[in-house]
Structure formats: structure tokens, C-alpha cells
Length: 431
Image: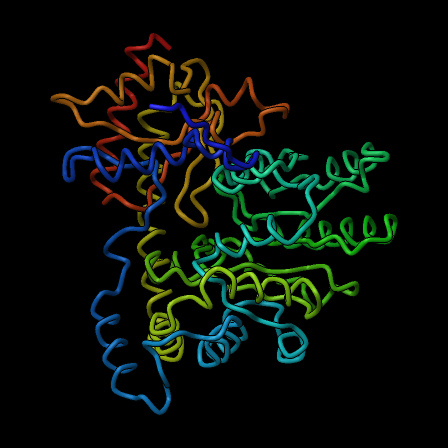
């Protein structure tokens, strides 16, 4: 038999080797022992937060009203369902502080082909190759995808208020001629993995810095705010996040949102809100290229839910995650306290980010092995910190002692059991 070579693009060649997140999701899907192993890693939402009965009602409403939800089981338009766009605008006016009628009317809203990640991936398609300015640690799934596409990351460390704007200014100024290679800014308003909430002052400062950078370079470099967890700010002591779109004089700021965390990931509804123009036109064309639209009947179901039960759903989801966050934080501090150097998160979304004093947490560490061995003991899955930091950033060493713990998927009792197994693993490692 003749040996034939397989030729791939640079991106294809990099993608032929599964990423850490890819491997972890595959292992969870195929090797996870439900009811025995404990998932603190894969960022699934809790099954009890998914309103399955409402989805049945929504489907019946869509199927039973063909005049309003016309051709709901056919192809849709690439900009998104007009019903969903209208419902989403009304929802954002009620729930996103800083977005008044005038600001919303001056911005275009489109629906992505397959969730918020498809919108984010679209920026990697339509923006020129170059440098992406982001935070460190950062959203490892997206940042890993960007690097496979050949982008270079300029990763800025965060603190308790999110991305550090003093370092952002410093690193941008140090780029020199490379400033011309900055492709876009990517900032999570609630960090995955650390759970840090970008303060309103920081958000305005990021916009001011990005605007000054645009003026200095003569280019309208997009500033992308990822709002994935913004509807899940459940700590009552925190102020409501404020959109800065009304303050965006240059038309560079965009917001990417999702219904995955407050309704269900399987909806695959993600949206992009920002100034109209060539970038938005390109994103709509990309949706068309990817398959015309997100499934239209799903968009119409989402519209029905945004018009009706969504407010009660958000309240219930946040109350549930708040209770879990408080219980899990107390367990972490009680059982892992002697090993903890720092702990962030627990105020929004469903993540804690731990830095341990001595035990290392990377996949080759005894701590990881002790929790992954399985057998008669449950496997405890978490995200190692080494997955979450930039490869050439300054946090590589400390990330070897860090981990992300999700309190989203499992019930509270199971998470507390997992924390106890972590305590045993830390003791076993002699930390």
C-alpha cells in the first residue's frame, strides 16, 4: 500500500493534537461515573438550574403559534431571529445597567451560529492575525484556541478587581512597533477561571486605555467584553456591573453574552452587541457561512422565555449559586486552610481559584494523581492552574500550585465531599 501524506493548514496541524480542555471534556463524557466521581472541573451548570418543564412549554408555544414564530423549523436568517433580537433588547434594557433605550437603539445586536464561543471564535476569523490583549489567568479554552490559530497573547495579570489597568498601560506602551500588530482586546467581566469581578471603575479604565490606544495607532481595534457570567453576580455586597457602551465614543467596544449560564448550555444562544459597521457585517456573513443561523426553533424558544419566565429563573439560579458559594467557601477555608496561600471567586459565576502553599496541582503532580486514581475512591476532577495561564507569561511557576474548582455542576454535599478528598490528597503529598 502506498503511504500517502496528510496535508493540513498550520491551524489544522495544531488542532490534530487535542487541547487539555478537549481531553478533559472527552474524559468526562465517556469515563465519568455518575453519582460516584465528582466533577469540580468541567464547567457545566447544575442540572437543577435548567428549567426543563419551561422548555417543553416554550416548544409548545412556538409550534402552536406559526403566525408569530413563522417557519420556526426551517432555516433562519444569519442576523438572528427578529423575535429573539427584540426580546434580547428588552431583556438587556431591564437587566444590564448602563444600557438605556438610546444606547441600545444605537447599537446592533446579532445572534451567533452556536453560542457565545462561536461569536468569540468569529473575532479570530475576521480580525487580522496578530496580538490579542487579555488577562492572565484567562479563559483557557478560548485563549488556547487563539494560540492554535497563530495569535500571540499579551496577557496582563489581574487582581481582585480584574485586569490590572496599570500593567495594561505599561505593557501597551512597551510594545513599540508591535503595537501595529494588536488585533483586539479580550476581557471577561467575571473571570473564568478566577471568579474575579471586573469593577465598574476598571471597566471604564479599560475602555479609556483602549480608546487612547486606538487614537495613538490610528486603528479602531475592537475591545471585546465577555459577559458570560455577568447575570450571575450573586454577592449582594457587589455593585451591579455597568455597561460602558454608552461611553464608547470611538465605536470600538463590543459585548458578547450568552443564555447558557442562566437557562441551559444546550440552547447554544450567544449574541454580540456593538456598533454597526464592517465588523458586524463580517460577523453576520460568517454566521451565514457556518450554516445560515443558529437553529431557528431554539432561537424562538429563547425569545418566548425572555418575554416571560426569565426574571424568576435568574433570581432562582442566583439564590441557588449563592447558597452553594457560601457553603463551599466555608468548607475550603475549614478543611484546606493550612494549605491555602490565596483564594478568589465565589461572588459571581460558580468558580473558586485556589493557590496552594506547597502541594503542586499540575497533571504530573502527586496531588493530581491522588485525586484522579479512581478505583474504590471517587475521581475528583478539577482544572489545573497550568491550563489557565499564558505560556510565556509571568505566572507559569505559581500556576503549578493553582487550581480552579467549580461549584456549578455538583450538588453541595458532593462538593464538600470532594473538598475532604482534596484535604486527604494534600496530607498524603506531605504539603
